Length: 304
Image (tube, rainbow, N blue to C red; front, side, top):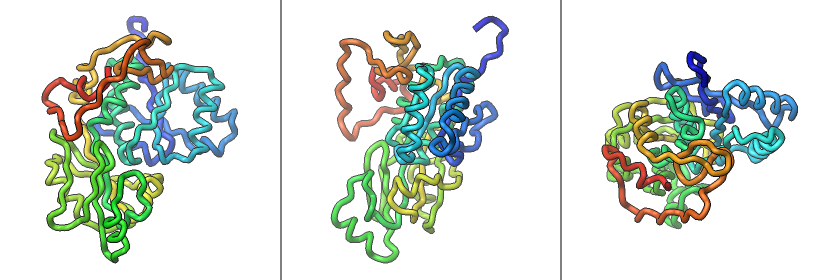
């Protein structure tokens, strides 16, 4: 970039408007909403993506695994037609509210002096610090988290509610006075999205997890499919402070992708999907261990 040239932030896109959360601070860049990709003419959608890449240089599309298959297929088709390594498609195993939170974190970081490759690959790092779950009126159709036979049976009892954590470690308990869920070991904020269920238990959970802020937002349209029911209150605990997010990302060693030459963090380039040649994947962390956020040890949670 030439001296004095205005920097245009890398574009962070979502596949529906309800995944574009309101700005966390004044620096948060707006989300690009790719509306109705599977319903619009192909050439119109192609022109939109081409324009975004030309304007911003790089585009990171954050989507849910509950996004309709036709939308996902259209995204891959558009990327192939553009023959572009400047479009990253990122669909982590987070519930829809967690996806919306992650997209907003990337929008916060887009205002910083991070290269497109580092910003895009930061999404994989930040997922480790998101605790996402829901209070459900039934687990009969829940297939994202292991559900025992007793829980399935109890879900048919009128008035039963279940508290579920889908990420980072699956948990499921029946809501009651003694019900508890393991949460983050660092300070977070909490976001709640209410569907067709009434419960005050999320407030109890926020206190138990030590959340220093509890806000509400509309429930994403994809949440009912993801959780298998519309009787739901989705919640997400996350890091909201930009300085903490920036410290996490910049504490991880950067490398250069051997294929496309872009700077990245982690073991895979999110733009061209190349991995370092001859590099073995790291051993998994033992279950139940945790890394204090106060230490710059994101390296332990993010493969190099």
